[in-house]
Length: 485
Image 1 (cartoon, rainbow, N blue to C red):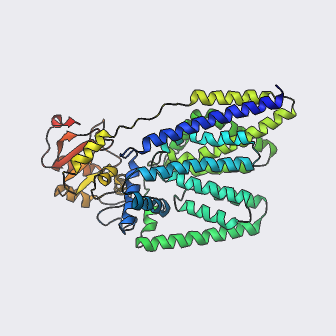
Image 2: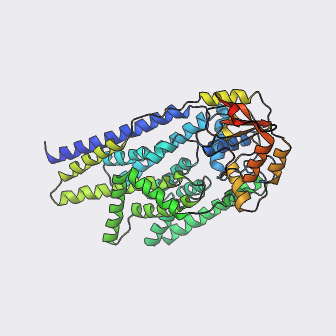
Image 3: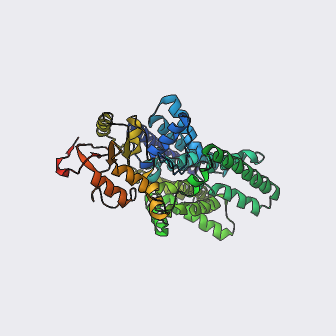
C-alpha cells in the first residue's frame, strides 16, 4: 500500500468516526426533544414569549406591569418560536427540532469554511462533525435556547464574507440578524472588520459598517415601537447580576479537558501565526470568540456562552491539521500524518459516550394533570409547567426579577403583597436539597418568607424538575405529610 493510499485511508477512518459520533449526538437529541417537560430553566420563558406573540401581545411589555414578563433576548428567536407555536401548538418539541437543525447547520457551515480554507474533504467533514461531538454542544443542542440560532447566522455570514465578497450586504444582514438573536454575537463581524483593516479595504469596510449600523438602527427602532418603548430595558437592563472573571476561565478549562486534542491543535495554530507574524482568519476568529465569551463571567450565564468558541476551535483545529500534514509531507514524513490522524480518531472514540440520555416525563405529566384541577393564578419557578398545563404565566423569569430587586433597586413589595393576600391558587417551587425556603438566586428572601407564612405544602409532590413542591393558600403544614408521586 503506497503512502497516498494510507493517508486517504486514515482520513476516511477519521471522518467516519467523527460522523458516527455526530450522528449519535443527533439521535440522542431526537430521543430527548420529544419529552413534554421543561429541560432547562429558560425554555419556559422562551416558549411563553412565542405564545404571547401568537396571542397578539409583545414579548417586551412594561416590566413594571402585571403579569411580570422579562425577556432578555432579541426578537428573532421569539418570532421563530411564535411561528412554530402557531403551526404546531404549545409544545417544546417543534422549537427544539428547530434548534437541533440549527446545530446541524452550524456543522455544515463549518464544513464549507474548512473547504474554503483548503482542507480536504475528509478533513473538513471530520472537523466539522466534531462540533456536534463537543460535550457542551451535545448537552445543549436539545434545549430550546437561542444560542445555536445566532451561531448559525454568524457562520452563514462568514461563509458569505469569504466565499462571495461582492455580496457584502448579505453578510452584513446576517451579522445584524445574529445581534437580534443575542447581542453578544460580535466576534464574527469584528473578525471581518479587522481583516478588512489589515487588507486596507476601506471602501468595503465602510459599506459594511454603515449598512450594519443602519440595519441595526431600523431593527432597534422597530422593536422599541413594538414594545411600547421598553425593548431597550429588556435587552440592556435585565442583567444586574455580578461578574466573576474566574467563571470564564473555569469554563475554558472545562472545554479544554473535554476536547484537549482539538484545543491543542487550535493553540498550535495560534502559535504558528505568531511564528509567521501574521494572524490567519481562523486564528483571528478564535481570538475574537474568546473575547466574546467573556460574558460567561456573569452570574446568570452558563456554558452556552462558549458555543462560538467551540465552533472556532473546530475551525482553527481543522486548518491547523491541514498545515501540519503539509509540513510533514515536505519533510519526507508523510506517513506520520496518518499515524497522528489515527491517534486523533482513537482519542475521539475513547472520550465519546455512545449512551443516550433518558428523560422520564411521567412525573411532570402527573403534575400537569394535578395542576389542571387548580385555579389559573399560579406562581411557578418552572414556567414550562404552566404553559403545558394551560395556565397563565404571571411571572416569566423569577431569576431576572430577583436580581433586579437585589441589585438594581427594584421593590418586590407588589409580589409580596399578592402573596400576603393569598391571591395565588398554587405556588410551585423546586425541592432544593438545602431547603425550599433557603436563600435562592431565583427568589428574594422576602418572597420566600411570604410563601412560607401564607402557604402550606400540599400533600401531593411530584418528580418533575424544578416543580416538585406545590404550595396552597393557608397555614403551613409540617412537610412530613408530603408524599412523592
